[in-house]
Structures are given as structure tokens and as C-alpha cells.
Length: 207
Image (tube, rainbow, N blue to C red):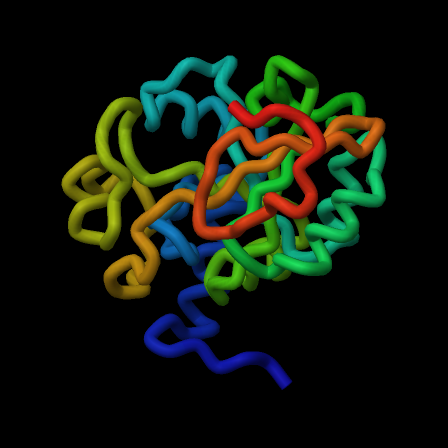
């Protein structure tokens, strides 16, 4: 039985997926702030997202995946620490940066060769990734250097009518996700503190 979304309908999700498949950008609520989603398999969509954000194309976009299988498809390795934290905190506001598999677009891979991803606890990005059948970006909805949008009105003030907007009300947790890097040997370090406490897994200096 398909989940019931309130106030977001299945029709809205289907329309947003059509936008993603056509290479468009969807502004969506997440468990933290509002985010901007594109289909990572679309070269044109990634270019449009870089232009929309006005951000350095070398700065990688974080991703939302539907489940562990989608996450593993992006990773070159899947260390035991990744599996443990994913099982403990996904779905939730924990972004895991894992060594990326070869061939991922440069916009998704950081300078250390990692790709950042999470399974969202908010139904909208989770359903979008599942309905699309692939990962989506979840970069914050703001031009570079400005505060992330916490509602659709703020996002629309930034981007106008060039995007597809999904209105999920005000952001429930107006803070960014915890970001943790795990290398191929399973060493863990915190790149950005946030709502998830991963101190029990940390094996290297945080930054």
C-alpha cells in the first residue's frame, strides 16, 4: 500500500518526478532545510544546478538515496563503519561521505574522492529517489553564501519561477545534517557537526 502524504499528494510526487526526468530542478522539503533535487544521471540537470546555486562546480553536491542498495551503488567500497552508522541513523540527517565508485560526475565527488549521501527521514525526498529509481541531489535551497531556505516562500524569493516547488510547510529542523567521512579502511571523522552524534564511531581527527 502506497504511503499517504499530507499535504503532499502522490500526484505532486509524480509531477515532480516528471520534472526530474526531464532534467529540471525540484525544490523540496527535507528533514533539515529545503533542498534542490536533480537527477544525477542528467548532465544538463547538474549543469543547471551549478548555475542555479552560483557555486563552485568543484564543490560536491550531497545526495539522497532511497535505500542502502542505492547508496552502495555509488560507493567504491562499503566499510563496516558505514554499514553500522547507516543502520543506526538512516533514515535521518546523517550524510556519509564514502569513497566514490569510478565514473560518477565530478559535481558529486569531493577533493578526497568521496561521495556524500543519506537516506532521508522526510517522506518527500525519500519518495522522489524511490520513484525516480536513482539518487537525487539534496543541496540546500539557497544561492551560494546566503542562508538556506526554510520554506517555499523563501526559496521562491531566491529562484523565482524557474523551479518546481513542493510545499511541505516550514522546515521542521532548520539545521544542516551531520557530515561524516569514512575512508576505505573504515576510519571515521566528522566533517560537519550536526543533529546526529557519531562520537562513538570517530577514529580520526574531526575538522
